[in-house]
Length: 108
Image 1 (cartoon, rainbow, N blue to C red):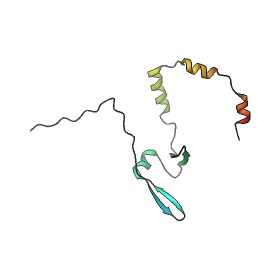
Image 2 (image 1 turned 180 degrees about the vertical axis):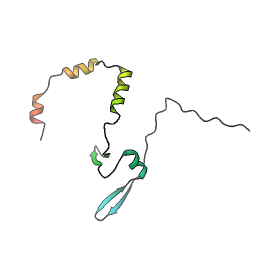
Image 3 (image 1 turned 90 degrees about the vertical axis):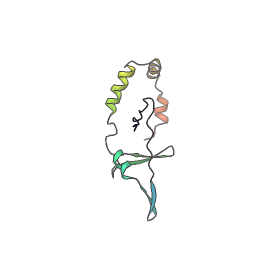
Image 4 (image 1 turned 30 degrees about the vertical axis):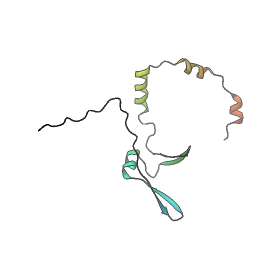
């Protein structure tokens, strides 16, 4: 009897985005969104999470440290690309500031 060897994963294959189904249920005059436990646990979603609407999407921001892992990501990016500014970066940084924008566009 021949045994099949396990299939090797291709290194070039990007991971698939994870999708979960949610259910909208009636709670009095309001609606509640029932989320699977797996997404709550994985996303760190709890009673202190924040909901936002952005460009037609409902975004749930967990209460856990949103910047966790940034330091490692920066170190990885610097190791891969170096720490030097590109010409495009320099143009953007050297651009004059627009005081008119600050005076008219900002609302407090």
